[in-house]
Amino acid sequence: MFTCATYLRSAVLLACLCLITTPTHAGEVTPFKECATLRNAAPQIIMGVIRTAPFKFKGKIERHEANFSLNEGESVEICSTGPFYEGYKVDLTIRTLIPLFSCKTRLSGEIVLRRKEDENGNKLLYADCK
Image 1 (cartoon, rainbow, N blue to C red):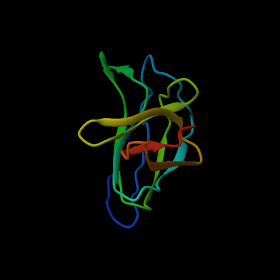
Image 2: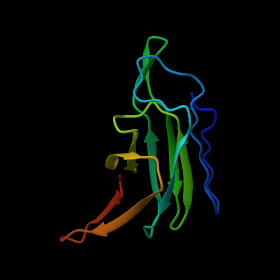
Image 3: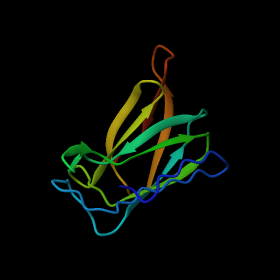
Image 4: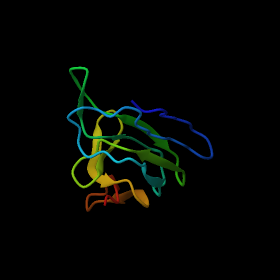
């Protein structure tokens, strides 16, 4: 379980993912927090979720997750001790009602959320995953 999963929409959005128990049959787990700053560089609100690798706890498959909603220019710090996917990565998904973009990324440095237009003028949201 996370000790906190804070969801605040204001000038500064802050979220923290902290593992308090060591799950059984988990992926990579660290004794310290892996952290990254998630920054919205798109000219719109971007919503999504950060998820750890699945693990078995009390006979159920679970995963830790934290939702985010960032206005243009807002940032949030995301931290976790795992369990991580291979290479100490988490799953980052940008979504509305449906997933629009998903990748595995490390929680280090800055992860920038962006928007671009394709050749047909469609606006596509994505992240600079590591």
